[in-house]
Amino acid sequence: MITYDELNTQNHEITELTNVLSYLLQDRGMCDTHICCDLFYRYGDKIKSHLDVVDHTYSALLSNPDPRTNNTARRFMSGSQEIRRIFSQYSKKWCEKRKQALHIGNHEAFLKETQDLFDMILNRIQDETEQLYPLIRQIKGDEQRAA
Image (cartoon, rainbow, N blue to C red; front, side, top):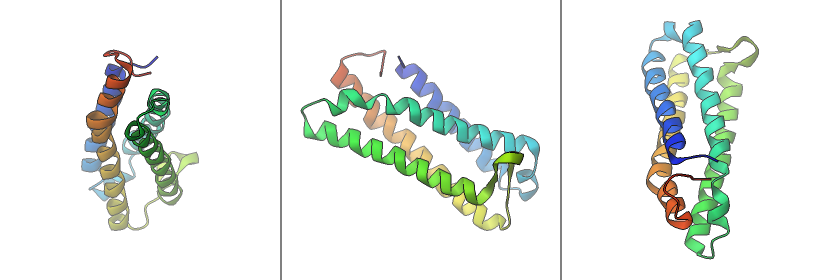
């Protein structure tokens, strides 16, 4: 079982890491530090873990007879798949997983792609908070547990 408090805590941690990394990665010298890389890999792990947890919340929406509810669940499921795909491509380009390091040849391009990724994740978190969680609460009638 996952509660809304746990989901919101995960969202808060991801948002916090996004903000810290956005600041640190601006400085090219910081990108090569062990601490910055650790934070970045923690960020990726938190995103993957959060998406896995949120995936368990869709069943109540998908079994609902309302087509709008079903469409919302399918849209979020599709969004999860797209985030995973984009993050995977991003990681292949910029990350050296065996070394737990970032591989940055062009800092400017790296910053742009990273900011695009961060924006996508923050938009997703906002959509979950404003659309998905309230809909699950409404459908399930449970104010504490999302799944």
